[in-house]
Length: 427
Image (cartoon, rainbow, N blue to C red; front, side):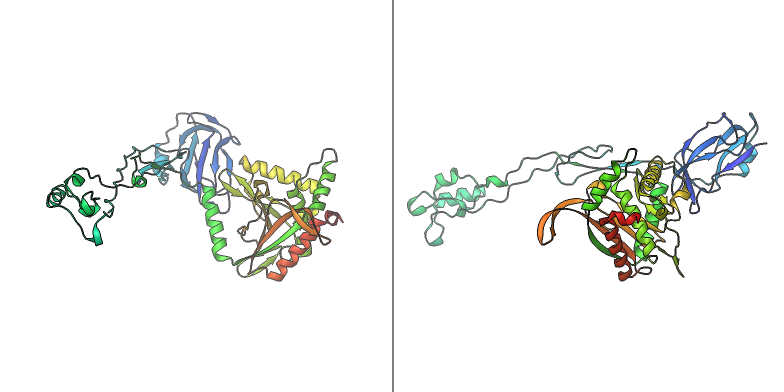
């Protein structure tokens, strides 16, 4: 008997799903446990396995199409089985397939355009030639500002539409005569002459937002406009951390990054300042006894935040291994939704992109997120003397409903001490 496969609800916040790829086509045999399709949710793209054995008789959702949860996704049954009655009774809502729409518009002015983005090229319109301005009056050598011209010159000027005030007279006393009108050339400043040029073309490519991008927009907009953010900033001396990292990486088979060291320091600082390791729950504040640190990772479609669980119980090398594994699977769209849930604090590091200082939007329901910039070699004052130093800028974004300024500042002070004295992380 034919079985109906519905669009599954693969995350707690999923309302729609997109078929990223079909692993089977109509007529193929399907076994229970085999991957039937890849489904894009609001958090990740996941493999969806079949629950039934049989033949794929019908595909109800085209690749790339978004449909609500519980929409008819496919029908699996015996080869040659009549499924017309099932299709008639289990119709699925029609949802438009995302189509990349390309639009082109001609520019109204002759603006040069280089390296246009992908799109259908429009037909350029030839820009209208810029007309020269009206003749500028050049005073003639007339006496006392009074126009002196012969009657014949006046008549010729009137016939030719020439302003006699612009004609230099060569007659006696600067009098304008016939020959002056005959040889008169209107004055046009050279800087006002332009050659016509082809108009540029305005072009763009419009791409429908993915489920992940929609979820990011919804979550961060809600956070930014509902949570009263405030920001605390501090500079950290990284000389000792640089030396410590060099020593750690000299051990065979060990390779840690500055980000791994910062995550370890954050975990240790959270243990000393539990009020920062908190969530806003609406009617209450949840102070977490466990420390799960979300690490922001840039992926092709946006930003995801895998969570390192019980970070305070792990060494720097182990943290580095887990972060690298989570980030790699996030970029490959192989990370599980549950691996991006449950964080109690978050860290975003843009230092590898050359960013020195920035602030982040809090990832709800967390009360804080730490922004980490680039380590910059710069002159610093030590023992009253200016010497070369290495400085890192940290910025703590706080939800004022959860964390007050004094609490956040105390946390940053402890974090600074730990990073500047790495041995304290392991004591």
